[in-house]
Length: 424
Length: 133
Image (tube, rainbow over all chains, first blue to last red; front, side, top):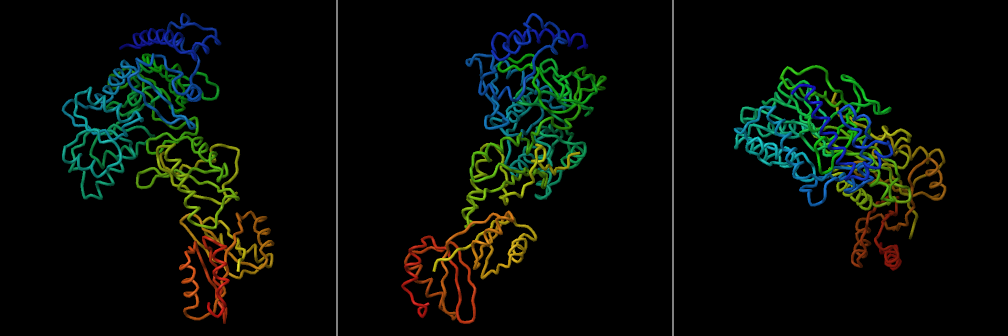
């Protein structure tokens, strides 16, 4: 598709989208009216810069279903991801959304070279997280055999890889390295398995990790990108050139903005990635700020695809952490700590990677009045906090009880986090 | 007899106990006994001093997390079997000991215990003379 044809298509879809949200989502109608624009004003894709942004905070303010455009009877599936505090982010999909998702996920897999002859293991979590079911549907759509391995049972995963002669796998890149580690321990080598294609995403990774994964598992490793607010895995993908991820821009229109001034940035400039869901009908979003920092690449890809490519995610414009593929906001931890009077509202999150698995330690100060001279009471307090964190964050955290005044005071947010993972 | 124990919550790191002893030393406070219960990330230092109020004051002003707990000090003869006979009595009357530590002098030994039921524990001990301990 030529650039002109693509822009023409995007413009038409954008107009339809704006009509949809204007008439069905009061949140957007109010915002557009405040800006004095109607759907009639939005005709070409260039008009998109006139539209309002959407933030994670907006999703939270409209929890749970306030931004849904479709009637509940049209919604066929609901996923949820972590919100910045207590409330998760809820995303409802219509049947048509699921069809599109399946199609874009299949596009990714096809670009990696997956065919109906492959046996493909999905090692992302199944459930509220979009990773598992998203890739699963794509694999089925391609016609390959899907093995819904999910997360957690590495020993069984290895056995299935070997015994079923599984040829493709999707999981987080750190889990791929963990699998390689487990393979070594089990006395297996890459010659004992038949993997040839790996789709890795849900967390940032590096060229060094790619080389190591490819070397140790004997496969070609490709990036897959997505986020549940926009769809799930399948928003962008690497082709055989492994040089940037092609965005399915006929469905997800990308922009790069300066996160401080909100001004659009040009090709090649690094800023915050923003997506507009051109075709979604369940919970369509205008100019959703992903907070992921990247740039859109200039020039055509040697693979022949004309869709625009994004570079690796180089960071975040907020303080979200991705731990074992799960999004964690320091504010979630804070809300749990504030609920418990035993603790000072001071904490430090220490993130590390041990044996290729991310670890999270939450250091928290115990209030002077709540100490006990009995170890058992203190351990129980520690347990209560870690149980509560687990239920809110969906990952387990190691709680470390600290003396009052031992965590450095600071105004800045970033000081609450020590990320010791070496990803650069 | 009931005595006051000072408990200090300490991060499990090098030099932290000495931070406490330095404060006590600077203020001329002597420790009669102490013990430390530790976990992988924190420890509890429990101590017995003569000047409890002053010790608490100087430790708190040095920013330590300090609490004061009532514990039972049992003085018994410093001979084999003395402690055993006391504990036998307590166990026989359903007293559970949360923790304990001891220090001995030449003729006598002092045992600090934290019972689950302080009043009951004292009542039982009052019925025992030193010779029986």
